[in-house]
Image (tube, rainbow over all chains, first blue to last red; front, top):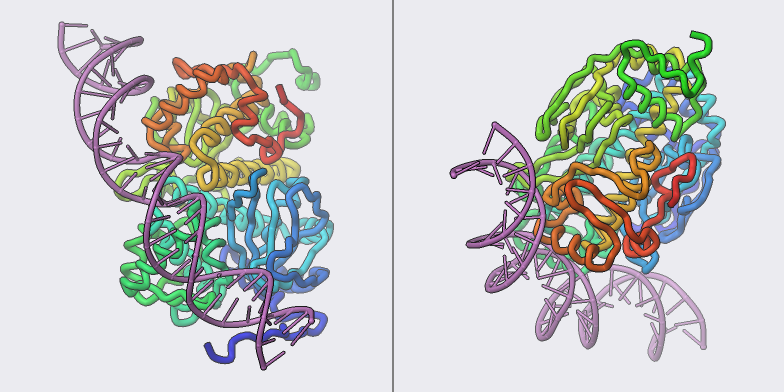
Length: 257
Length: 257
DNA sequence: CGGAACCTTGATGTTACTCAACACAAGTGG
DNA sequence: CCACTTGTGTTGAGTAACATCAAGGTTCCG
């Protein structure tokens, strides 16, 4: 590795530029007028930082604000009483992982930081005012939660009916497409702060088996995956291996490789 | 029509009484005023019938209407290229399984009838007019899709991290609670038109294994399941076996046994 | 009566899990 | 600076929970 780890996150002024990611993301799934764009940028937000392993929101909470990911990565997860963990989604900058809390009071799962993460918390009231003033944004947000649901259904197919190789290949395909859509995957390479154990808990596998499958993929020249950095070496074969079809991502503009 | 909100005045005219299930269901998840109630009942609908195995909506379709289940059962499913099938949701009378098509053009999965089913098709335009006139209903519908998402996430945990016994017990618990909420499970007994192969495809198992687990449950005196009829004999132990916690269903009123 | 759809049972096979050990890097406190 | 710890990746051996394959049984229905 070269000069990668900027230990100390850059400190932004009182309006972090990452706020634009929300606009960028919504533009990816709906039309956003310049008025709406400005209203989004003017939302009152409280920025907080989290270390890896900390929870932004916890199962059982009844939040009165939504969190917008500015920098970092989070995952949606749930624990069984005996500690088994299922990760149900990864979220990237621009996402609002608990948007649903606007309508569903009590959280039925937790949201944790996968790496040092900055999140902007927006009061529910502000969100309601915003969507009241701009119904177009309300539909954009609804659409966003629907796509989130479509992704979790696709994960359901994976865990239910794909074998380990297909599952892992599929996850890599999905992350590439999603990160490309927010310009975070130049050269078919992206960072993903997931350990092999995280991947295992996302795909319903054991960490040991994830390790072995990744070695297969490396041997086959499909990908590299070291230091939390994934590079796709053979997109065509990887897609085939995954039985990947990006329709479910409902991306407005094509980000195909 | 001033007095129409009286519970016992069944003056639906020539409208099918099943239409009320939609009201019943929405009342279960949000407050519905009597005006909104009437507007729901006045929605233009085209009723169509389907035999078991027929699709109401198919992957790739771009629908311009939503389907409301009046009578019967449907499931949401998707096929892999080689025929493997994953069922992602069961839907009961009162559900609008493709409500999302209002915002997401192309269907990324199919909806099939599990038994002879009557569905009422409502033009998207009528739905948009309705939610425009009654924003409260818009939020009720959004909430409905969010709960649908919560259920599919719970299925994801099941398939990812529960073993076969837990999965099957959990499905039974969920169906009981959901059907009780629409008064379709008197005496902890309900009909579910799923074959063992259907259950297998919903839970990521083989039909043979489903059969064996069901036999275990029968031997243990937890349930009976014959002729598409399920009876819960020991709710307490079944819940324990399933690690069941109904929070994710977000039911407004408790329907606990 | 014959067939179709579904359920049941047994035998066999395999995917992926568990357990356990070790390697390696980075961070931490002495 | 080192010894120690902690987190992560890697490898091997043994095993369990499933799947698959195949056959027979039941029920229902035209």
